[in-house]
Image (tube, rainbow, N blue to C red; front, top):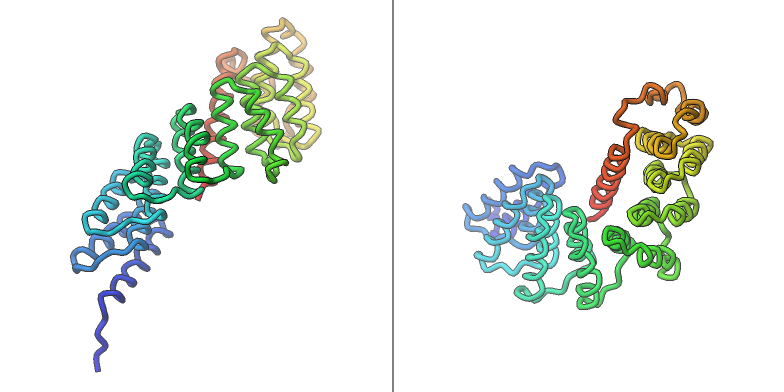
Length: 324
């Protein structure tokens, strides 16, 4: 006797297939399957719509994610927090911070859903990636309180970065030094973000204090601390950082070496630069060139500043990838 497959069973099968496509980063196939639900007049559930939107997020197709959410509403489905989180994530990954915040507001005021920690962290990340630091601080100050949620370490890392961008380095340091009281252990990302906050405010001494509190060496932290010293014309301190990194078996790169060259140039000690740098250059197997082989663009200040900005961008993007 032939078994009759119910609509619920068919929907479950489609949902499992969509989820598999999402995990395999096959967003086109995921959307094709999601459309197949409507073609068969099957009602999608939150699991199906959430998997389809998550697939869009991985494919950086934020507009399709919004469209899928609208279709779910049109089908009289009440999207849950997981679905909203997936849609906000799609906007965040595409750097559509305004869309992410609009979804957050719609989630709270229209859908009457309570944001989760994932919701707010994703909205924070969207603002951070778009350099909307003031908006990020508003979320940290108001939205967390309204949702009665305590920020976690991911949240606080973004807040430290936002405070640094706003030149509020003292508040950034206060959060950094208060992590233990909150039950958190600072990561390399936390240290690098705090060092960057100090560097932006030209507080090179504070940047070094935070650097040497780090449990392990991190090239990104050294890069930004070296730039902080270079900005303050502390060429000897910048050179000490290169030596310290080398002795700790770290690998100085073009950012840190370029910053030292910049500081030496500004301080008028370029004549003795080659011998000083030679003592802390990379191992022979490294692809890094010797100081006398570096391009002229590495010596000027704007180059080192741009390199530091690039390091911050890499840091911010790596933080966003840590979010669920």
